Image (cartoon, rainbow, N blue to C red; front, side):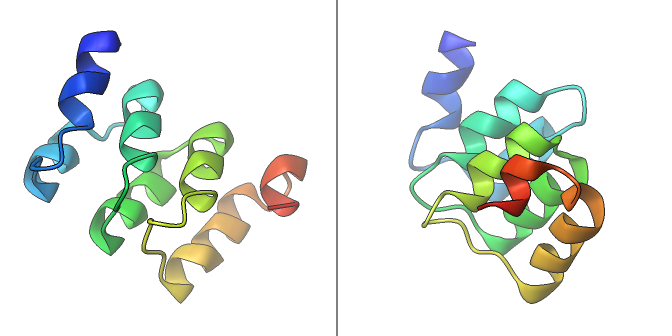
Length: 88
């Protein structure tokens, strides 16, 4: 994961590359992406769709993440029962 973190934190990494990394079985990788200084709406939506509550929580707490109204609604639909997500 340390090597992945260095690569996934690179400022010039494109959305296309990050989309290829995002997968339900790669929660740790998506958490690294969710912590980036800037997370586009496209990447945020992908993380919302595929992320487990802990991963989505990292995204929601990131002020640099662009979340749409639809993205927030999806978070509520998918993870509204999770106390940590609900309190954020």
